[in-house]
Length: 262
Image (cartoon, rainbow, N blue to C red):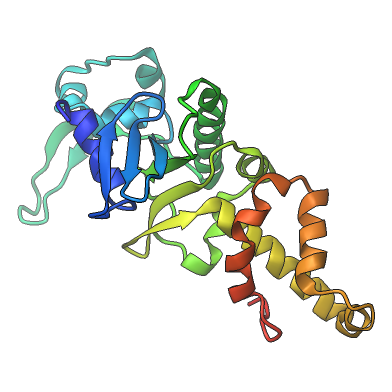
């Protein structure tokens, strides 16, 4: 791990995959190979989420903000278009009646729509690139690290309505990555969320609620059909057969008779 980027990626990797029973090797396409003492070989690709290149440069290039404010030195044409440097007059609270004139940097006002668009582009790009990866591994996972934390002021139980769009859900559903881990901050607490598993659980809750509202439970019992059978058929019909069975054991722990949607 020689450069700053490698060290950063390793820090992100170890937020999820930290186990004394594995050996971590730096790689290319994907970024890491995890070798477990069981013989399993797992690939992991790391990527960071930014609104756009301008936001990434502001966060990562040392001294860039000072250069902008002091010398108006833009390093990219997109930055010059998105960032505004204006003269302001500042009135310090400690010195009533006096003011200081200075340059101020005005940042873009990013919305949740911008956030979803950025997420979709990042995920789609990685889904396209996986075709070039070393697929000799048993599985390959994607880790998306959120550098914007737009979800921080939301609640964990409702984060999906701020993040997901139909485009994003389709990218998750059809992705060749075995799992997609999303690391983000909500209410100042860092979480990692398994997006494929979350998608499947969400579909299960929707189906369970549909059966409950339409009072179909007794009909299924009379036909000797289990909930899992109906759910599996739904997954196949919406095109999730490729990864559905990976989670069926876990789903049985969540799909109980008294489960209701909040």
